[in-house]
Amino acid sequence: MRQSRRTEILEAARAVVQRDGVRLLTYEALAKETGLTKGGILYHFSTREDLVLELHAHVAQQWESAMEQAAGARREDLDAGQRLRAYIAASCDPDRAELMLLLESAEDPRAREIWDDAYRRWAPELPEAEGAASEADLRPFLARLAADGLWMYGAALPGSFDPEQRRRLVEAITRWSDGSPGSPATR
Image (cartoon, rainbow, N blue to C red; front, side, top):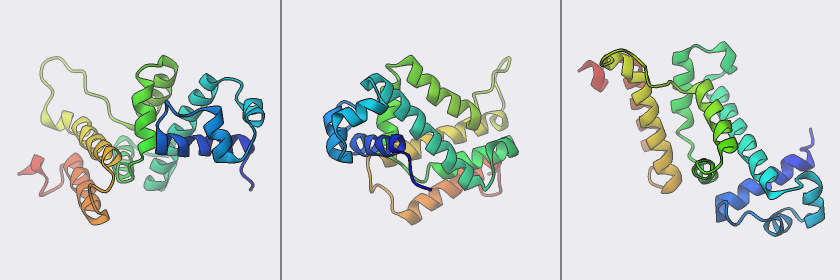
């Protein structure tokens, strides 16, 4: 199936953000990246704000698709543990554009909501319990933080880990999140 022109523009926008950051995402940069005219881009995205907000949604959806692919099933068909394992596995593939957009969303409540919705669908929340939660109760959220740290480190400093190191780190976080033998939680 042929990619829609709108999707082509969003993919080009992602490439610009990946390379140059969100600030340098302009109609002119997109025209150069896509080979379209500025008017052709304006036809699909009448304001830069619309373009950036749609880019947030596009990239967040791709992230969710990567987690579904890692899980081998749709999110709706997964339990909380399976979603967490898919979330951890997705941390194996850091992306600077995702990082730039996530950071940029802190300044835009509408963009922030797009990312917050994705996190609510996939990532465990910090348990709200009277008093101190047990380590077992905290483990899923702590595994989320570890996976986020691995992803952020890799996105901010590309080449920090070779594929084997990254695989071992993802496996260790997954084992720990499950409370598997040999994990820090079971020693």
